[in-house]
Every structure is written in C-alpha cells, then in structure tokens.
View 1: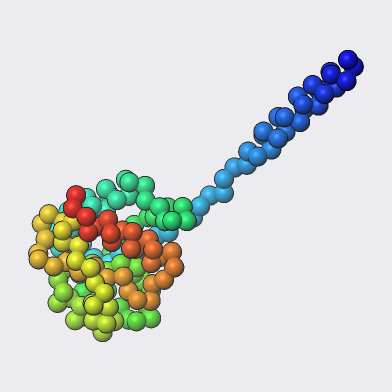
View 2: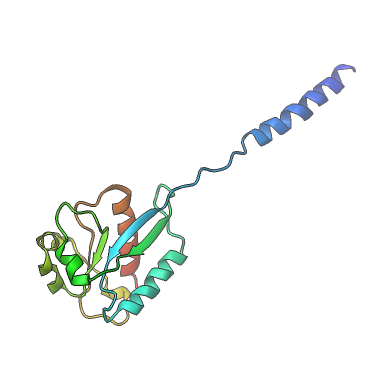
Length: 156
C-alpha cells in the first residue's frame, strides 16, 4: 500500500516532464525570395501586381516548408534586360513584354526555348508573354520561381 503513493508521485512528476519536454520553439525558417525582372510600365502591369498579391496571400511554400516571397526589381527594364548574362544570377524569373525583348541579351535568347507563356493568367495581355527562369538558377531559388511561374499560368 505504501508503494502506491510513490508510484503516483513518480508518475505525476515524470508525466509533465515527458509531455512538456517535447515543446521546443520552432526554428524560424528563412523565406526564399524570388527576384522578378519585369516591365513595371507594361500594359498588364497592374494585372500582374494583382496576381502577385494574390500569390503572396496564398501563403506559398516550397516542398521543404520554406515560405516564398516575391520581390520585383526596380530600374530601367530594357537596361536590366541587356545586362543579363549566362553567369548573372540577379533575377530568378524574367517576364518579358513580348518575345522580341529577348533580343536584348544573348543569355535571354539562349533561354527562350524554355520560356513559358503566362498570358492565360493575365486579363489584359498580348498573345504571348514569355516567362523565363534563367538556366543558371538552381536549388530552392529555381523551385520557388517555378512555383510562382506555375501560379501565373493559371487563369484567375
């Protein structure tokens, strides 16, 4: 009979330790930022802004659980296109106004066969809006850019 209070006391002491011992704060997961180059003054610019906000509002994540954040480049569109090289990794996703804009850079011309038309996801757009993930982009950056590109392809 004297053993019963000891067993109960041990259980009352050990049980909370087991239950609370597994409670550790989760480590903060660093988001993956997709740097997008696009013409801020394009015909479909405001529509693209809406699609970007819609995507961010959906709380997108990679398969690893890392959140995805979209960042749009500021600066002269034509100048930034001309500075694209096969070794530069300034942008993870390049959205052209038209396929003709690829002529601004040899690197863009090389990546054009892999371009995806995102026009279906934009209301006010021309017949072809190429979206390019440069071939030098790899790993989580590439996966995040692909997730965003796929979201842009879908009609709203």
